[in-house]
Amino acid sequence: NKQIHDLLQGNLLEVTNWERHMILMYPAIQKLHWHRQEPEWKCAGAGVEFSHLGDERGHVRCDGRGAEGGSLFCALAFFFEHFAHDSLLQDFPPPREPIDTPNRLPVLEKLPAFELEPSRLLRWLAVLVGDLHQPLHWLREYDYGQSLEVVYQNSNYTLLSLWEDYLPSRLPPKPSAEALHRQYEEREASWRDTVPTQLFRDWAKETA
Image 1: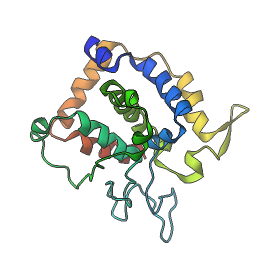
Image 2 (image 1 turned 120 degrees about the vertical axis):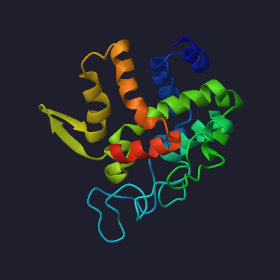
Image 3 (image 1 turned 180 degrees about the vertical axis):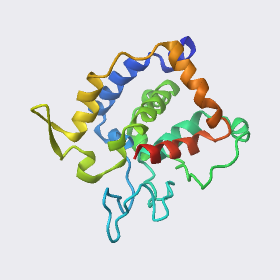
């Protein structure tokens, strides 16, 4: 709607182009798009490796083991809490385990001041919510799918390019605004009593 358009200083399609521009201008910023943890998890973890997202108990928190402070989940929590009002967050029960949201994102400190204006930070929040729902952004194995080649319909792709470039270009038309609103109303009740940063964590585990 117009309010969101004004806050973002553009629409979501323009934000996608802006994201590409930011990566070209400031390559280090792309660290925010990907999950990192120590040790990294793998699809078939063995020994010290985990076969699931998060630490040995499956906890995703910004402590280095469950998630690195400047990676996707922690950056998303950082941008959300930048805009969230403390008095509103008090209406939610606490997350099931601490988030440990970082106080700063060092990669942002290298950007010029105009890139840190509220509209820019809100754009990052919107972009990372999208990344949150991309499975390969959560698995560092095979360089997030960039070093794994696949053949589909006699054409070669990296797994990442197949997932993020080819498949989206073949999606059916997007649902109408009315259909999206109905879908939101059907799901909203299950989200209402959960602090958004806990929802980010739940969605991350579902996606991964």
